[in-house]
Image 1 (cartoon, rainbow, N blue to C red):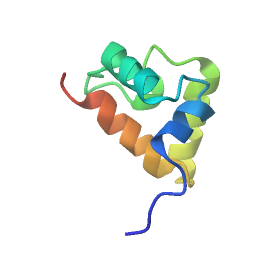
Image 2 (cartoon, rainbow, N blue to C red):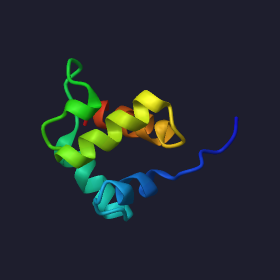
Image 3 (tube, helix red, strand yellow):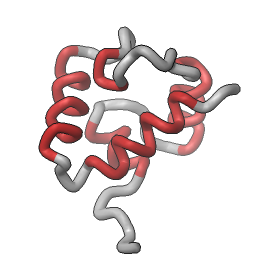
Length: 79
């Protein structure tokens, strides 16, 4: 399996979020677990721009799609 083009922290930067380990951990602690019936891009904590980015990357199966999937899994993990 090839390594992803983008790192998890890169996605946080792209979303305009704090991208260091502490910032990522804090974000995940604050927002997880995301309910099963809510699509990642429809979560209430995203801005319109963030939700659009996530939606487009998933739909296009773009090079960000793998780390978007990682974010989705991380937000669905039980605390």
